[in-house]
Length: 145
Image 1 (spheres, helix red, strand yellow):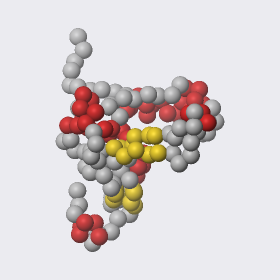
Image 2 (cartoon, rainbow, N blue to C red):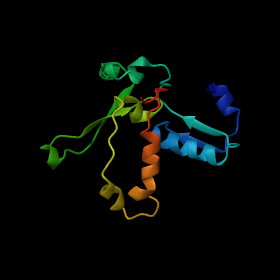
Image 3 (spheres, helix red, strand yellow):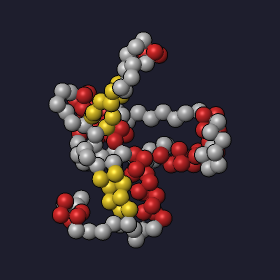
């Protein structure tokens, strides 16, 4: 990590404002495409490295404790008729990694038809499946018997 002085006295080829999952993926892809790029990620929340309340699923409730800064709550400004006049309240991650850092390591993928319905080249399920497989792998160093 760079200090504020190092950031302001350096030049970068690209900057990602907010260090959530999507931004981090974009930065990773840019870096892979051109390893010589200097890319800056700016996150207003803290670094989540070695934070057991974020890396240990059983501790996730600590992020919801009063005064904890890992989560902020987005409150929709308009009441919804679908929620009987209530507003939507969504917890969002306020740490490096964004919501992915506070989602209790849960993952849900939409059905293939959801992606295919976008009818967008490169975003069909068959195009995305290899990427899903890449992130869904788990390698604990164990061998199968």
